Image 1 (tube, each protein chain N blue to C red):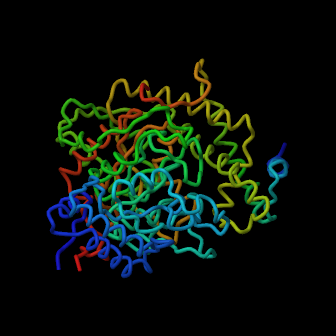
Image 2 (cartoon, helix red, strand yellow):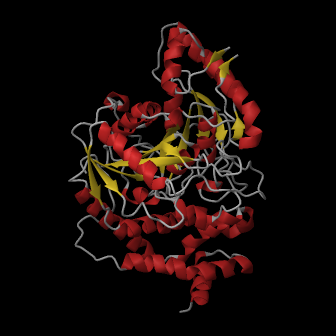
Length: 470
Length: 59
């Protein structure tokens, strides 16, 4: 019995050295799912048969000298609002079109598959990426591997819990107001919301079309960089992408050295919130000290129009979601979950003038942020004010109270969440690192430098004892 | 126009009819939504040349 690697990067090395096969790795992930999924509620649908076939093909290709890169033979799960050829996309709803993208991959999934990834299945999400878990609906209730009485965050709930517990080594999530970064923070993993427009969104059920991002969720920054390298770049199916936009080899920027970079620390809008975890400030300060020790110059900053722009995000996406769902809401209101109805329904209550004011404030906020970024390279703050929320107290108000993520969707800048420590109760906390538009590589560089100096991202929840090869 | 009239009118115009219990919750929550919007209307304006929000590598 051989202990399996925790990261894609280490697994890729083991696959090439012959210590491990993709079939071994995929079977170990399936065994973890057999053991834990009933508790954690990660999967909507498992694709065991096709995953094992893909793994065997990956092994055969490597044996024949064909190497598709860092994702070759790596098990990856897909949030169930993104289309995969193996099965339907439900959005965790009973209200969906089974023919939508039937038998086809979203472009981003096709890119992962072409890079050799093994697609393991479709993962739990909040309904259409916005409702809260609803026991009245026929979908799993996702639970946090660090404490199963708590919520793993969302809306990419299965993606976060599954990476954390070792059911796959990476996952796709989506982020409209924080839905990659929040579960990443709550589950103690890494999640990236890259620059808006860098990854094609066709084949992904929309929430807020001007705010949506499909992002990688992984154990380490190096793994997220490897995924984004494959995912990024223009596709004509997504009109929100800048024409000709290209990605890059994001792993190439990971040196561990932050010399010459100026990092703005944002306390004014992130620390001191009532009800915040008592250890948050100390843990955040320790994280900033690590960035300084890696060579960065630290300065204090205050983001202008922070509250206004964060509010703009939370006002904007319900309108855009309402427009998408209106025909079904008109006919099948009560088939949606109660939380979904409550938040999307609010989108009907803004006038056209209100919506345009939201967009105008987003433009003003982005201009003000661009000005701030003339004096710093990166900005850091905590991802959330607390650790994972107990199911006993989970509601829309408790969720909004902890989030520091929505601001970054309105402005579109790349923003990464990495684990930065634990509450006194043993729940993970996240550090958020943001950069200028299309400075995604620099954001990864800082996150990777932090992870080279700390081990928080490699900590495993007790129920996910290290997986072993069969 | 009071919150109840506004909320009922906007849902009616949008072609959606929540049940009464949920309509009451929307009416109760509407002042908070309006307060968030008021925050945005209070942002000092500046001349803008871009009519839409764009993201380009040169930004």
